[in-house]
Length: 312
Ligand code: CP
Ligand code: NVA
Image 1 (tube, protein in one colour):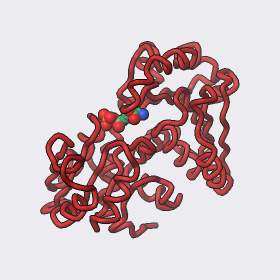
Image 2 (tube, protein in one colour; image 1 turned 135 degrees about the horizontal axis):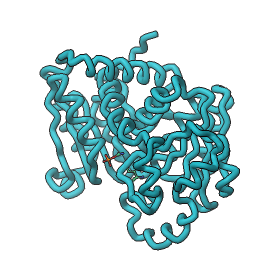
Image 3 (spheres, helix red, strand yellow; image 1 turned 30 degrees about the vertical axis):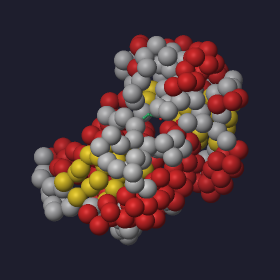
Image 4 (cartoon, protein in one colour; image 1 turned 90 degrees about the vertical axis):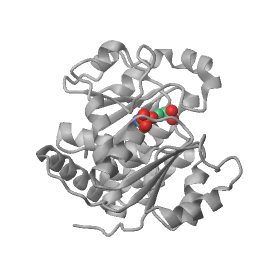
């Protein structure tokens, strides 16, 4: 079933129904197949996309730029070093100006409030390319990757190990709860998801028939996992917490021993990247046959293209 998502922003997956997410994932798989055939389509010919970055990026920037460019569109990279935003100009004024010149806007930065304001004032679709709170386009690529490996993500168990309250963990929690995937966070008490998000996602999980659990018990949490997922221990903007995090999360490194604790031979390893090998994941695990991180990175492009095609 096709959904009309024209004009919609993607600020957090909380705003998307399971049916809308399903539509975006189906389109992503289709776009990946199409790309493999070498077919040339120019669906964004004559269109423009503004890419605002307050934080660094490899995958997200390249996914947006190549996806838009492949379709004949013109992406414009605007780092916070270059534009007036944050120096002389407010987010509201920036949004109104960009909305007059671009067909869509991507924002990566610190505050969630910024993408919300961009969407409110620009009048064009705005995509959250990561804020301190959410990373919705990452979660779409993650679920697409799980579906490629297992056929479906429904009924599978995804276990996030490490900083369970960060942007990636939170967006993964939302998408799993909405799409019927069991989700477990294995993290020390101070790095577990907040009560409000857990409560909200509990409601989504009840509707989709999945379960959510949180524990600091590693063997109990990772048992039966189909996917072990981790992310950096120190997210962008939290650098002053490095020492404390390293000490706290040392026992949570995804190692070959931890992978064996799932009790399943087919368990895969996932990571949004960039990875700090030797911290959150051992070199052996990320380089092992169980690791799907490169497919996951590629899928950022197909899912981001799907989001843009559906909404522009
Ligand atoms: N996963 C991800 O968002 O990577 P980048 O920081 O390189 O964009
Ligand atoms: N949690 C990480 C994700 C990077 C893609 C960060 O925010 O730095």
